[in-house]
Image 1 (cartoon, rainbow, N blue to C red):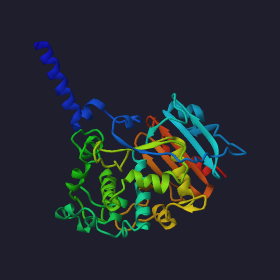
Image 2 (image 1 turned 90 degrees about the horizontal axis):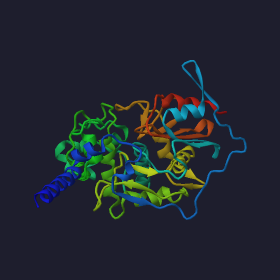
Image 3 (image 1 turned 135 degrees about the vertical axis):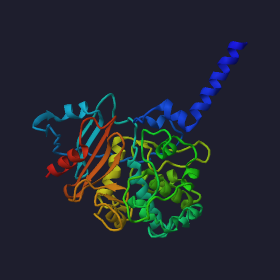
Image 4 (image 1 turned 180 degrees about the vertical axis):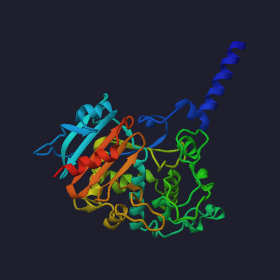
Length: 368
């Protein structure tokens, strides 16, 4: 009996350990692209009429890449740098599509912070639909609990620009940091209402997942009877004719909140459609899904009020030539260069030894 008692006690302690944030951090260790299996989620249904990109009449796959004086076969470079999917689209047609490391077109990959750009899309849609009045609204219009923490002067635009001044630790290796609380914790709503400020809003740029999760709670409250996943499905996922079901990870099974700073789980081709949507200023086959003015504001250079030229409304701007991209941890990218009608998706197990900002921009600018 004693052995069974000891075994039962050990199992109970193990279960309790895994159920807490610190326990999950230790058990799961560092994030990987299969993290969608770790968390509860809400499903995004594919469209009944799916859209598939046509193959280009003149496919031009990159043959070699020139780096540091060396010429390397492009596919060798991708595989050696832990890429699992690479897609190049030009003029809405597939120039190149290749999968590596036992992945294929049906393989799910966690988006990580590419979800921030999708959250921005939903903010734009919510303003257009009247759920949110404007980006100038104070956060406290939707989260009044933050008034006592001085958030009356923090606007939705501050959150979009990462100039909100949050006191937030973005470290991915600190089990006691804010990033671990938001990623592994099960009480996102409570965590958001406990946030405090370190800098006056509009004076200091600092990339923080906390700002995007505040946007998520604003959407959650503004939408009222709809979940963020339902809204994404209605406004973007179904109209784009996504080929596959997808999911958005939430913090807990019952009444969970979407992790808007990360954790949209989908396939490479469907991530590419999000890039194509913004390539066409929010218009998809004649239907304006995201307001054109929102896309313009989200991808233009702006250095006012503490903003940095390379970040705008949850999108990264790798150069000052009009290209932009969604970027996620471990090297997940949706790169868009409207001047050349180019969309590139790179998904990977990690970055490898590659400067993807430079490589994606170089490829985008190389196509005529």
